[in-house]
Length: 236
Image (cartoon, rainbow, N blue to C red; front, side, top):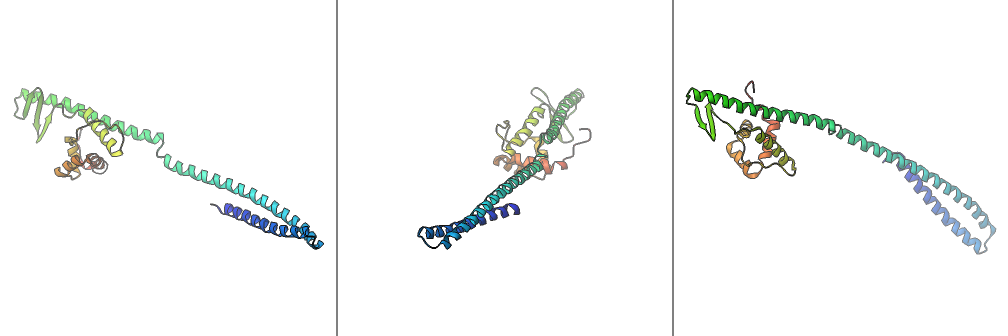
């Protein structure tokens, strides 16, 4: 509340109190005149009528002043409300959402691209390994096509882009409490285990997060804070 509004409210209250006091005096004088008392009271009554009228005019002026002060206060509060909203919404506008959306699209597209390249590369290298009768070919008949390389197993069809994109979306849904989250398996995906390992989570902690339903929260936290520890090989 501004000083102007407070002053106007006090001024109106003062004039109302003055009028109430003056009305009491007038009521007393009027009663004395009715009782036929001296004309001195009648003369005083006339003077008090004039004083009362002036007080009423001052009250009217105070009322108008208060209305102006209230209007100014309302305008000030509306301006502050708009300024507060503007400070928040500049970072929450459609333009800001579009920037985040574009970044998410690009990131998901990058993920899908690597998944597709992985499948094509695995099939090509597996064929070469099989043709050369190399011992790192683990399986090369439907439904499994697997080879080992530098301690890691590569299995065709297990890192589909639609699966990873869906899992990423589902985890965000769960963390944000959004309805209609995509359905995914409860256990951590092998790619997700790379993230949790980079964040220092043990297998036991990952399993506990699976059981408690906190896996999504842990993964999002890792993605925001610990994913930088994961270094993809050059060229991926």
